[in-house]
Length: 75
Image (cartoon, rainbow, N blue to C red):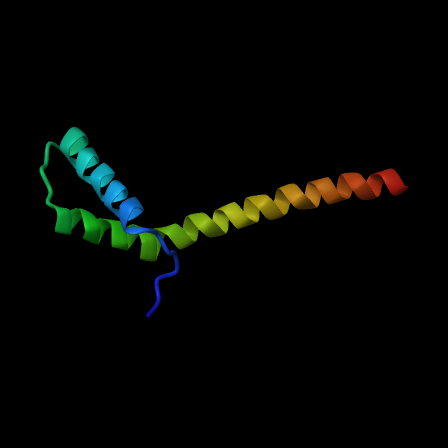
């Protein structure tokens, strides 16, 4: 199955590093590369689509309000 989001290896490595840093700072845990990549995969596959949909809904509401403004000028 093709992933829903395509990111470069550099982006993935950077995000995995951020996850490792978070665990070290907030939880005092030193997690390895594999664990951070598995967590990142979970975020990408299960959580990112939810945030994406929220962004789409927000964009739709914003664009609808702007279109209403434009049509209000016509009246």
